[in-house]
Image (cartoon, rainbow, N blue to C red; front, side, top):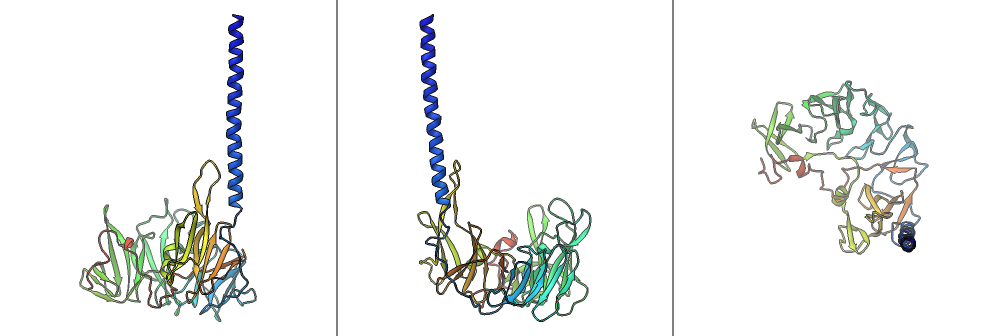
Amino acid sequence: MQFTTKIIRAAGIVAGTVLLILFGGVAVFWVVKDRMGAAERNLHPIVDFNPSNFIEVAEAPFFYRIDNKLKYAASIASDAPTLFESPHLYRWDFYPSPDNKKLLAVDRKNLYLIQKGKETITLIENARFYDIPLGEFFYDSRNLQWDAGSRYVFIPYDKKTEPRNRSKNAVLFRIDTENISAPEIIAKNFKADDNYFSVTDKAVCFGYLADKNKKKWRCTTKNSVSDIEKYSRTGILLENSERITGIPFAYHSGGGETWSQRTGFFIKHRFRENFDGMFSKNDPNKPLIQFRRFKKFPPLDKEFSGFLSFLAVLPGGRYVVFSIDHGEDILLDRSSLAYRALPRNVEVMDNPAISSDPAFRPWPDLFYWGKSLHRDSPAP
Protein backbone atom coordinates (compact mmCIF):
# COMPACT_ATOMS: atom_id res chain seq x y z
CA MET A 1 0.00 0.00 0.00
CA GLN A 2 2.85 2.35 0.94
CA PHE A 3 4.66 1.42 -2.27
CA THR A 4 1.56 2.18 -4.33
CA THR A 5 1.21 5.57 -2.66
CA LYS A 6 4.80 6.46 -3.54
CA ILE A 7 4.22 5.50 -7.15
CA ILE A 8 1.11 7.69 -7.30
CA ARG A 9 2.97 10.61 -5.75
CA ALA A 10 5.87 10.20 -8.20
CA ALA A 11 3.48 10.01 -11.12
CA GLY A 12 1.76 13.16 -9.91
CA ILE A 13 5.06 15.00 -9.66
CA VAL A 14 6.05 13.90 -13.17
CA ALA A 15 2.64 14.85 -14.58
CA GLY A 16 2.76 18.24 -12.87
CA THR A 17 6.25 18.87 -14.19
CA VAL A 18 5.19 17.95 -17.72
CA LEU A 19 2.14 20.22 -17.53
CA LEU A 20 4.27 23.05 -16.14
CA ILE A 21 6.77 22.67 -18.97
CA LEU A 22 3.94 22.44 -21.50
CA PHE A 23 2.07 25.54 -20.31
CA GLY A 24 5.32 27.42 -19.82
CA GLY A 25 6.38 26.62 -23.35
CA VAL A 26 3.03 27.75 -24.72
CA ALA A 27 3.25 30.96 -22.72
CA VAL A 28 6.77 31.67 -23.95
CA PHE A 29 5.67 30.93 -27.53
CA TRP A 30 2.80 33.44 -27.39
CA VAL A 31 4.90 36.07 -25.65
CA VAL A 32 7.62 35.77 -28.27
CA LYS A 33 5.06 35.72 -31.05
CA ASP A 34 3.23 38.70 -29.60
CA ARG A 35 6.47 40.65 -29.34
CA MET A 36 7.27 39.77 -32.92
CA GLY A 37 3.78 40.93 -33.90
CA ALA A 38 4.26 44.13 -31.91
CA ALA A 39 7.57 44.76 -33.64
CA GLU A 40 5.90 44.14 -36.97
CA ARG A 41 3.07 46.50 -36.11
CA ASN A 42 5.57 49.19 -35.14
CA LEU A 43 6.79 49.22 -38.72
CA HIS A 44 5.27 52.00 -40.79
CA PRO A 45 2.50 50.81 -43.15
CA ILE A 46 4.28 52.49 -46.08
CA VAL A 47 7.39 50.65 -47.22
CA ASP A 48 10.54 52.79 -46.93
CA PHE A 49 8.50 55.62 -45.47
CA ASN A 50 10.13 58.88 -46.56
CA PRO A 51 7.66 61.79 -46.70
CA SER A 52 8.48 65.00 -48.53
CA ASN A 53 7.75 68.65 -47.91
CA PHE A 54 5.90 70.11 -50.87
CA ILE A 55 2.84 72.21 -51.60
CA GLU A 56 0.36 70.62 -53.96
CA VAL A 57 -1.31 72.80 -56.58
CA ALA A 58 -4.43 71.21 -58.03
CA GLU A 59 -5.84 72.24 -61.40
CA ALA A 60 -8.78 73.93 -59.67
CA PRO A 61 -9.77 74.90 -56.13
CA PHE A 62 -11.26 72.24 -53.87
CA PHE A 63 -13.00 72.17 -50.51
CA TYR A 64 -11.21 71.08 -47.35
CA ARG A 65 -11.45 71.57 -43.63
CA ILE A 66 -8.83 72.58 -41.06
CA ASP A 67 -10.24 71.97 -37.58
CA ASN A 68 -13.76 73.45 -37.75
CA LYS A 69 -12.96 75.90 -40.55
CA LEU A 70 -14.07 75.13 -44.08
CA LYS A 71 -11.76 76.43 -46.84
CA TYR A 72 -11.60 76.50 -50.63
CA ALA A 73 -8.30 76.75 -52.50
CA ALA A 74 -6.02 74.87 -54.92
CA SER A 75 -3.60 74.09 -52.07
CA ILE A 76 -4.01 73.11 -48.44
CA ALA A 77 -3.01 76.18 -46.43
CA SER A 78 -4.05 77.37 -42.98
CA ASP A 79 -4.09 80.99 -44.16
CA ALA A 80 -6.63 80.32 -46.96
CA PRO A 81 -9.89 82.25 -46.45
CA THR A 82 -12.49 80.55 -44.24
CA LEU A 83 -15.87 80.10 -45.91
CA PHE A 84 -17.76 78.53 -43.03
CA GLU A 85 -17.10 77.54 -39.43
CA SER A 86 -18.97 75.16 -37.14
CA PRO A 87 -17.97 72.93 -34.22
CA HIS A 88 -20.39 70.23 -35.41
CA LEU A 89 -18.99 69.12 -38.76
CA TYR A 90 -18.21 65.45 -39.34
CA ARG A 91 -16.54 63.41 -42.07
CA TRP A 92 -18.90 62.45 -44.91
CA ASP A 93 -21.26 65.31 -44.10
CA PHE A 94 -19.96 67.34 -47.05
CA TYR A 95 -21.26 67.16 -50.61
CA PRO A 96 -19.29 69.14 -53.24
CA SER A 97 -21.19 69.94 -56.42
CA PRO A 98 -20.04 68.23 -59.63
CA ASP A 99 -18.45 71.49 -60.86
CA ASN A 100 -16.73 71.77 -57.45
CA LYS A 101 -17.90 75.36 -56.93
CA LYS A 102 -20.62 74.74 -54.36
CA LEU A 103 -20.72 72.68 -51.20
CA LEU A 104 -23.54 71.27 -49.15
CA ALA A 105 -22.62 70.86 -45.48
CA VAL A 106 -24.64 69.26 -42.71
CA ASP A 107 -23.84 70.11 -39.13
CA ARG A 108 -25.75 68.79 -36.13
CA LYS A 109 -29.09 69.88 -37.61
CA ASN A 110 -29.08 72.10 -40.69
CA LEU A 111 -28.19 71.82 -44.38
CA TYR A 112 -26.11 74.73 -45.68
CA LEU A 113 -25.21 75.88 -49.19
CA ILE A 114 -21.67 77.28 -49.24
CA GLN A 115 -19.99 79.13 -52.11
CA LYS A 116 -16.87 81.24 -52.33
CA GLY A 117 -17.67 84.96 -52.43
CA LYS A 118 -21.31 84.46 -51.43
CA GLU A 119 -23.17 84.41 -48.16
CA THR A 120 -23.81 80.95 -46.70
CA ILE A 121 -27.47 79.97 -47.03
CA THR A 122 -29.41 77.63 -44.73
CA LEU A 123 -31.32 75.52 -47.23
CA ILE A 124 -33.10 73.25 -44.74
CA GLU A 125 -33.44 73.10 -41.00
CA ASN A 126 -33.46 69.72 -39.23
CA ALA A 127 -31.87 67.97 -42.21
CA ARG A 128 -30.07 65.30 -40.22
CA PHE A 129 -31.16 61.72 -39.59
CA TYR A 130 -29.62 61.51 -36.14
CA ASP A 131 -31.41 62.68 -32.99
CA ILE A 132 -34.80 62.70 -34.75
CA PRO A 133 -37.56 61.28 -32.48
CA LEU A 134 -39.46 58.29 -33.83
CA GLY A 135 -42.59 59.29 -35.69
CA GLU A 136 -41.37 62.73 -36.73
CA PHE A 137 -40.78 63.77 -40.35
CA PHE A 138 -37.36 64.97 -41.43
CA TYR A 139 -35.16 65.65 -44.46
CA ASP A 140 -32.79 62.70 -44.93
CA SER A 141 -29.41 64.27 -45.69
CA ARG A 142 -27.77 60.82 -45.90
CA ASN A 143 -29.39 60.26 -49.29
CA LEU A 144 -29.16 63.67 -50.93
CA GLN A 145 -27.75 64.06 -54.44
CA TRP A 146 -26.63 66.79 -56.82
CA ASP A 147 -27.69 66.83 -60.44
CA ALA A 148 -24.99 66.75 -63.12
CA GLY A 149 -25.35 70.47 -63.82
CA SER A 150 -24.58 71.46 -60.21
CA ARG A 151 -27.81 73.40 -59.94
CA TYR A 152 -30.37 71.11 -58.33
CA VAL A 153 -30.22 69.20 -55.05
CA PHE A 154 -32.43 66.18 -54.40
CA ILE A 155 -33.26 65.15 -50.85
CA PRO A 156 -35.81 62.66 -49.44
CA TYR A 157 -38.36 63.72 -46.84
CA ASP A 158 -39.47 60.85 -44.65
CA LYS A 159 -40.88 59.70 -41.34
CA LYS A 160 -38.45 58.38 -38.75
CA THR A 161 -39.23 54.70 -38.22
CA GLU A 162 -37.39 51.58 -37.16
CA PRO A 163 -35.52 49.68 -38.34
CA ARG A 164 -33.29 51.70 -40.67
CA ASN A 165 -35.92 54.19 -41.70
CA ARG A 166 -37.56 51.93 -44.29
CA SER A 167 -40.64 54.02 -44.94
CA LYS A 168 -42.35 53.35 -48.26
CA ASN A 169 -44.12 56.69 -48.39
CA ALA A 170 -41.25 59.15 -48.44
CA VAL A 171 -41.29 62.19 -50.73
CA LEU A 172 -38.34 63.27 -52.89
CA PHE A 173 -37.81 67.04 -52.97
CA ARG A 174 -35.76 69.14 -55.39
CA ILE A 175 -34.09 72.43 -54.45
CA ASP A 176 -32.94 74.95 -57.03
CA THR A 177 -29.68 76.43 -55.66
CA GLU A 178 -29.77 79.28 -58.17
CA ASN A 179 -33.31 80.31 -57.33
CA ILE A 180 -33.82 79.52 -53.66
CA SER A 181 -37.45 78.89 -52.80
CA ALA A 182 -39.55 76.22 -51.14
CA PRO A 183 -38.46 72.66 -52.06
CA GLU A 184 -40.37 71.19 -55.00
CA ILE A 185 -41.91 67.72 -54.79
CA ILE A 186 -40.44 65.51 -57.51
CA ALA A 187 -41.61 62.04 -56.54
CA LYS A 188 -44.14 60.63 -54.09
CA ASN A 189 -44.16 57.13 -52.57
CA PHE A 190 -40.39 57.26 -52.74
CA LYS A 191 -38.52 54.73 -50.63
CA ALA A 192 -35.80 56.79 -48.96
CA ASP A 193 -33.08 54.15 -48.83
CA ASP A 194 -33.36 53.26 -52.53
CA ASN A 195 -30.76 54.42 -55.04
CA TYR A 196 -31.89 56.99 -57.56
CA PHE A 197 -30.45 59.12 -60.34
CA SER A 198 -31.31 62.12 -62.47
CA VAL A 199 -31.25 62.82 -66.20
CA THR A 200 -30.27 66.49 -66.68
CA ASP A 201 -33.20 68.54 -65.35
CA LYS A 202 -35.76 66.42 -67.19
CA ALA A 203 -36.32 63.42 -64.93
CA VAL A 204 -35.53 61.59 -61.71
CA CYS A 205 -35.59 57.80 -61.67
CA PHE A 206 -35.72 55.53 -58.64
CA GLY A 207 -36.20 51.86 -57.81
CA TYR A 208 -39.12 50.16 -56.13
CA LEU A 209 -40.24 46.60 -55.43
CA ALA A 210 -42.97 45.57 -57.84
CA ASP A 211 -43.31 42.36 -55.82
CA LYS A 212 -41.17 40.48 -53.31
CA ASN A 213 -38.67 39.22 -55.89
CA LYS A 214 -38.63 41.86 -58.61
CA LYS A 215 -37.24 45.37 -58.47
CA LYS A 216 -38.40 47.86 -61.11
CA TRP A 217 -37.37 51.39 -61.98
CA ARG A 218 -39.67 54.35 -62.38
CA CYS A 219 -39.04 57.85 -63.72
CA THR A 220 -40.91 61.02 -62.98
CA THR A 221 -40.82 63.79 -65.57
CA LYS A 222 -42.63 67.08 -66.01
CA ASN A 223 -45.25 65.26 -68.04
CA SER A 224 -45.77 61.86 -66.43
CA VAL A 225 -44.69 59.07 -64.10
CA SER A 226 -43.88 55.74 -65.73
CA ASP A 227 -41.69 52.66 -65.39
CA ILE A 228 -38.56 52.25 -67.51
CA GLU A 229 -38.77 49.97 -70.53
CA LYS A 230 -35.29 50.47 -72.03
CA TYR A 231 -32.26 52.57 -71.22
CA SER A 232 -28.83 53.46 -72.53
CA ARG A 233 -26.07 55.88 -71.67
CA THR A 234 -27.75 58.57 -73.75
CA GLY A 235 -31.41 58.17 -72.96
CA ILE A 236 -34.34 56.29 -71.48
CA LEU A 237 -37.58 54.98 -72.98
CA LEU A 238 -40.52 54.75 -70.60
CA GLU A 239 -43.36 52.24 -70.81
CA ASN A 240 -45.75 55.06 -71.70
CA SER A 241 -43.56 55.71 -74.80
CA GLU A 242 -42.10 58.97 -73.45
CA ARG A 243 -38.41 59.38 -74.27
CA ILE A 244 -35.92 61.05 -71.96
CA THR A 245 -32.74 62.24 -73.65
CA GLY A 246 -29.56 62.95 -71.71
CA ILE A 247 -26.88 61.19 -69.71
CA PRO A 248 -28.11 59.48 -66.52
CA PHE A 249 -26.18 60.79 -63.53
CA ALA A 250 -25.83 59.31 -60.05
CA TYR A 251 -23.98 61.31 -57.42
CA HIS A 252 -22.06 59.18 -54.94
CA SER A 253 -20.61 60.78 -51.82
CA GLY A 254 -17.64 59.45 -49.93
CA GLY A 255 -14.35 57.96 -51.13
CA GLY A 256 -13.88 54.35 -52.07
CA GLU A 257 -11.68 51.91 -53.92
CA THR A 258 -14.10 51.49 -56.83
CA TRP A 259 -14.40 55.24 -57.28
CA SER A 260 -10.65 55.79 -57.28
CA GLN A 261 -10.18 53.03 -59.85
CA ARG A 262 -12.34 55.09 -62.18
CA THR A 263 -10.21 58.16 -61.57
CA GLY A 264 -7.00 56.30 -62.39
CA PHE A 265 -5.83 54.84 -59.06
CA PHE A 266 -6.26 51.29 -57.84
CA ILE A 267 -4.89 48.86 -55.26
CA LYS A 268 -3.42 45.45 -56.01
CA HIS A 269 -3.52 43.32 -52.89
CA ARG A 270 -0.55 40.97 -52.58
CA PHE A 271 1.00 42.16 -55.84
CA ARG A 272 4.04 40.55 -54.25
CA GLU A 273 4.44 38.56 -51.05
CA ASN A 274 3.37 40.45 -47.91
CA PHE A 275 2.93 43.71 -49.82
CA ASP A 276 0.10 45.65 -51.44
CA GLY A 277 0.63 48.33 -54.05
CA MET A 278 -1.10 51.45 -55.34
CA PHE A 279 -0.98 51.75 -59.11
CA SER A 280 -1.91 54.29 -61.76
CA LYS A 281 -3.78 53.38 -64.92
CA ASN A 282 -0.94 55.11 -66.79
CA ASP A 283 1.47 52.39 -65.60
CA PRO A 284 -0.42 49.40 -64.15
CA ASN A 285 2.78 47.39 -63.63
CA LYS A 286 4.84 49.79 -61.51
CA PRO A 287 3.53 50.68 -58.05
CA LEU A 288 3.34 54.32 -57.09
CA ILE A 289 3.72 53.35 -53.45
CA GLN A 290 3.85 50.08 -51.49
CA PHE A 291 2.14 49.02 -48.26
CA ARG A 292 3.00 46.32 -45.78
CA ARG A 293 0.63 43.55 -44.80
CA PHE A 294 0.37 42.88 -41.07
CA LYS A 295 -0.87 40.03 -38.92
CA LYS A 296 -3.25 40.82 -36.12
CA PHE A 297 -2.18 39.99 -32.58
CA PRO A 298 -2.21 36.29 -31.58
CA PRO A 299 -4.07 34.04 -31.66
CA LEU A 300 -6.04 35.48 -34.62
CA ASP A 301 -3.20 35.52 -37.16
CA LYS A 302 -5.39 37.25 -39.75
CA GLU A 303 -3.74 39.59 -42.18
CA PHE A 304 -4.70 43.16 -42.93
CA SER A 305 -3.27 45.83 -45.20
CA GLY A 306 -1.42 48.97 -44.15
CA PHE A 307 -3.59 50.74 -46.72
CA LEU A 308 -7.09 51.54 -45.45
CA SER A 309 -9.07 53.49 -48.06
CA PHE A 310 -9.08 56.16 -50.73
CA LEU A 311 -10.48 59.46 -49.46
CA ALA A 312 -10.32 61.98 -52.29
CA VAL A 313 -8.88 62.76 -55.70
CA LEU A 314 -8.03 66.43 -56.24
CA PRO A 315 -9.15 68.25 -59.41
CA GLY A 316 -7.05 67.20 -62.37
CA GLY A 317 -6.34 63.71 -61.06
CA ARG A 318 -2.68 64.34 -60.18
CA TYR A 319 -3.08 64.13 -56.39
CA VAL A 320 -4.81 61.43 -54.37
CA VAL A 321 -5.56 61.40 -50.65
CA PHE A 322 -5.80 58.09 -48.80
CA SER A 323 -5.70 56.79 -45.24
CA ILE A 324 -3.27 54.25 -43.74
CA ASP A 325 -3.36 52.02 -40.69
CA HIS A 326 -1.50 54.44 -38.40
CA GLY A 327 -4.47 56.79 -38.50
CA GLU A 328 -2.82 59.17 -40.94
CA ASP A 329 -4.06 60.67 -44.20
CA ILE A 330 -1.46 60.75 -46.97
CA LEU A 331 -1.41 63.04 -50.02
CA LEU A 332 0.44 61.50 -52.99
CA ASP A 333 1.66 63.27 -56.12
CA ARG A 334 1.22 60.81 -58.97
CA SER A 335 3.70 62.68 -61.19
CA SER A 336 6.71 62.95 -58.85
CA LEU A 337 5.74 60.06 -56.49
CA ALA A 338 6.41 62.42 -53.58
CA TYR A 339 3.99 62.19 -50.68
CA ARG A 340 3.36 63.84 -47.36
CA ALA A 341 1.30 63.15 -44.27
CA LEU A 342 -1.53 65.60 -43.79
CA PRO A 343 -1.99 67.08 -40.32
CA ARG A 344 -4.63 65.21 -38.35
CA ASN A 345 -6.83 68.30 -38.22
CA VAL A 346 -7.08 68.45 -42.04
CA GLU A 347 -9.85 66.75 -44.02
CA VAL A 348 -10.15 66.97 -47.81
CA MET A 349 -13.69 66.75 -49.22
CA ASP A 350 -14.08 64.00 -51.76
CA ASN A 351 -15.90 64.99 -54.95
CA PRO A 352 -17.28 61.89 -56.69
CA ALA A 353 -17.89 63.87 -59.87
CA ILE A 354 -14.23 64.81 -60.42
CA SER A 355 -12.24 62.54 -62.70
CA SER A 356 -8.98 62.49 -64.62
CA ASP A 357 -11.08 61.50 -67.63
CA PRO A 358 -13.01 64.61 -68.85
CA ALA A 359 -15.59 62.38 -70.55
CA PHE A 360 -16.39 60.52 -67.34
CA ARG A 361 -19.77 60.84 -65.68
CA PRO A 362 -20.78 58.63 -62.75
CA TRP A 363 -23.17 56.13 -64.28
CA PRO A 364 -25.58 54.15 -62.09
CA ASP A 365 -23.78 50.88 -61.55
CA LEU A 366 -25.17 47.59 -62.76
CA PHE A 367 -26.21 46.51 -59.27
CA TYR A 368 -28.59 49.46 -59.17
CA TRP A 369 -30.79 47.83 -61.73
CA GLY A 370 -31.35 44.38 -60.22
CA LYS A 371 -32.61 41.71 -62.60
CA SER A 372 -35.27 43.74 -64.32
CA LEU A 373 -32.90 45.79 -66.48
CA HIS A 374 -29.44 45.20 -67.90
CA ARG A 375 -26.66 47.47 -69.04
CA ASP A 376 -26.89 46.03 -72.55
CA SER A 377 -30.50 47.07 -73.03
CA PRO A 378 -31.03 48.50 -76.53
CA ALA A 379 -30.82 52.24 -76.84
CA PRO A 380 -34.26 53.84 -76.96
